[in-house]
Every structure is written in structure tokens, then in C-alpha cells.
Image (tube, rainbow, N blue to C red; front, side, top):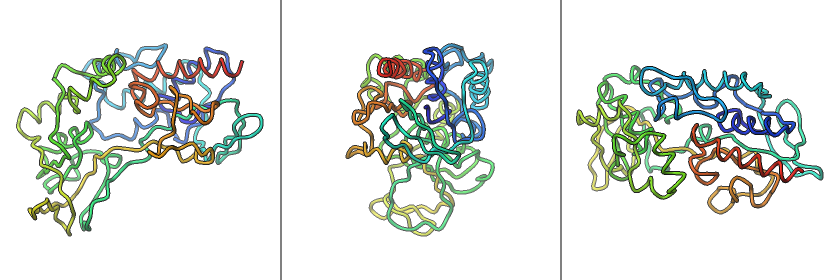
Length: 331
């Protein structure tokens, strides 16, 4: 049983099919593509199509720079059909329980029993917003709700977050709004020549190497806004007050909108009955296998489930390893 039909779930299904294991993929979404159909309009990959592929079949070329999200969605939908992957949607998994002959997966359309479960639900569906003192009377939204700059034209907008989504959304807005970009530490742009393929190579050979280089991939829109001096970050404000953001020392700035580009947490609530979470909220793993439940594997949540496993190019390696372990365990 694979829970989640995004890129990680499809990579797992590809290897399960090759291994000849009876399997099914349950996806809560109504369409193919995982989280990709839900990103902002200008969202693009960090790498050319040839370096953004799932196992078995390269992503078709995109001639105009890095592929947009729509190109990824088309690829993932075609990938499902190409390999006749057994995806059922929309099926929402409610919980996973231990039973004597495996793991029982309870869903809104019925229950299943599986000899092994791969959880590949990702993080997009659990956006994180930090607790900031005070109240804000303007509009607040998270990365997941942002689509484009048009609705904010001429307004005062604070973008919070010094990672890739924060930089990309700030760059998207910079020429349309009165922008304040607030980051917990000064933004660190990766060298311009670094793209997703280079990041994958670094992550899989030197897991601690990326952090030394920087945090933000200088994709063309970010690079252009940076070079125009439109991406000037301020330190993080420490409270909200009416329509103002307030910095330590009392400086305040009126804003109409706050966009929280502050990341995500893994979607693991369906696994709560197994009682596996550690003190940090994550499930301890050995590779992708849950240490407290050998029949459960976690795939695609980030480096704690495999280097670069939350990327298109990186998830194949950990999916292959997870399926190999499952095959050995079941046989």
C-alpha cells in the first residue's frame, strides 16, 4: 500500500511494479500531480527537465528555460499512464493500525490490509506559521494560498521567510507592491550557476555541503530582482499590532498583507495510531524504514527519509531502496 500519489508515491509504485508486488496507490487528490497543481502561477523547477525526472522515463524537454509547474503536472499524469500505475483517487486515508497479519489502512472509502505500507504524503498539506505575538487586522496567508501578484497590486505586503519560496514570492511581487521582505537571518543566495541538479549531487555526496553554500537558488526571476536591488531583506519583526509589523526597539511599518513563506511540516497524522513519533515530532527511521514498525516506510519527506528525497530527481534512489527492503522482508 502506497499512501500518496505525488512524485514520491509514483516512484515507489514504479519499483513495486518492477518487483512484481501486488500494490495500490491511494491518493487524496482529485487529479494527478501531487502538490504541483497547487503552487503559485510563476513557480518553476530549479533544473532543466533532463535533470528533473522520475525513474524509468525522462521528463519531456521544455524549451523555454526551467519547466513550470504545469509541465510537471503533465509529466506526472503521463507517467502514471505510461506505467499503468494502480492509483485510486480521491481516497483519503484516515489512519493506519497494526493487525495480526499486517497493517490495516482505514480510508473514507473502506479499509485495506497490507503486508507493508509506504507513506508518501509529503508536506504541502501541513503549512507552518510561527507564533508571533499580537494581532493583525489585515490579511494573512501562507505560501500554499499565494497564486500571483495581481490581487496585491499597489498594496503594502510583508513577505516572511528567507528560503526559496520566500525569495521567489518576494521577487514575484517586487515590482507590483510596496514590499517588505523579513527574514530570520540575512538571505544567502547560492552561486548563480547552482541549480537543482548540482544541489542533488551535493546532497547525495556531501549531505552537509549545501548549508555552507547558501539557502536560496538564484532562479532567473530571483536573480533579476536581486540584481535590480528589489530584494532587500529586513530582520524579522517580533510582533504584530493592528495593521503594523513591529520590530525590536519599537520601529513599526504599516502593511496590508502578510504572506508567511515559513515552510511546512510532514503530514503524519494518519500514522498516529502506531505511536511512532519521537520528541521532535518526526518518526525515527533507518533509511526509509520506521524503526518502531518494520512494515512501514516513509518516503519523500526530506533528508530524514533520504538525501534529496523531496525532489523529483532525488526520490527515485530512496524509493528503489525502500522497495528492495520490502521485497526482502516479505519474501
